[in-house]
Length: 167
View (cartoon, rainbow, N blue to C red):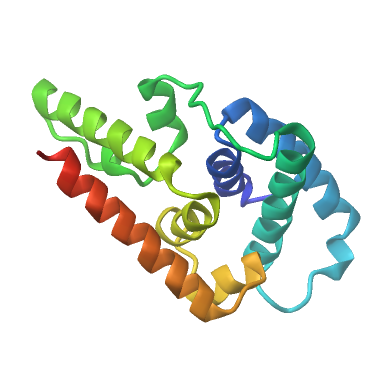
């Protein structure tokens, strides 16, 4: 399956843990295999990410209490190697620039992790996975207006964080 890496990243963002994402991915792959004949002419990518999303929420309901507490169990180096397309992708040449980029990326990841789950989900699907608003609506089973609202609110929270973080 060509979408395993991006699906794992989605599971990682939703569960907050690489280990938990592995469990989710195992379940999602089994679900996808069992229902492969249901793939319509639509986007196979959106279909598989929907399965991963649903498996993530099922896993969270089963293994987490009603109040979710996400603990980042990876160090900054592991997080940066797991994530692609982040600020670290265009690393500058000097060691100081590399350190600054890694620090900024770690703080941004922490800010995204601090977002409410539904906002974080929409933001990750759009910014990290590059899904269109229509594809996000299909994956999350909500209207496009809701997707737009969640993205706007998530971005607003991140901008507020960026202003406060720079002080």
